[in-house]
Picture: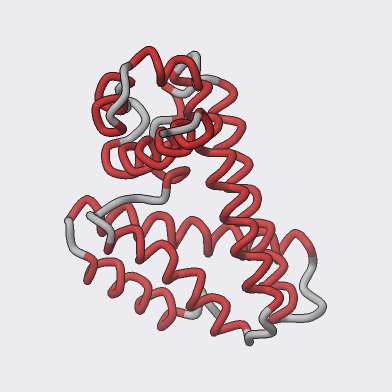
Length: 189
């Protein structure tokens, strides 16, 4: 027998996959209910509005992402290894059915998002930029906080942008080529 917690979790998993594949605007409670094998009213029981679901998705995605980044930082890897693992996360989404980073695809729909969802998507971006800024500052001791933050933002924008371009072409080789070009030009140094 499926518990309420199980149902909520199944909704979250299915919704994440749908949003990563088609975007927030294409998320339908009816399609979601069909995917999970429940009635649409059951989705509404757990998430009264689409905005509630979107905010919960983005919040969990951010929490999971931060946990991954914290664990990665704790492994004692060098700068290049950390950055390679970071870039690989975005690549894996493309490998999984040409999907996008959840918050990346939602950010592209920013104007259509409820405020609570926007805030959670911004939290994801801020967490990534902060982590990359710390990584950049550790790579170059003495770097000003402003320069480290600018570098972190540039790396995040480069990786997220490359994922978007590769998705638009349905070609993961495009992502790899862009990442290679960024490495060759020194963005990742």
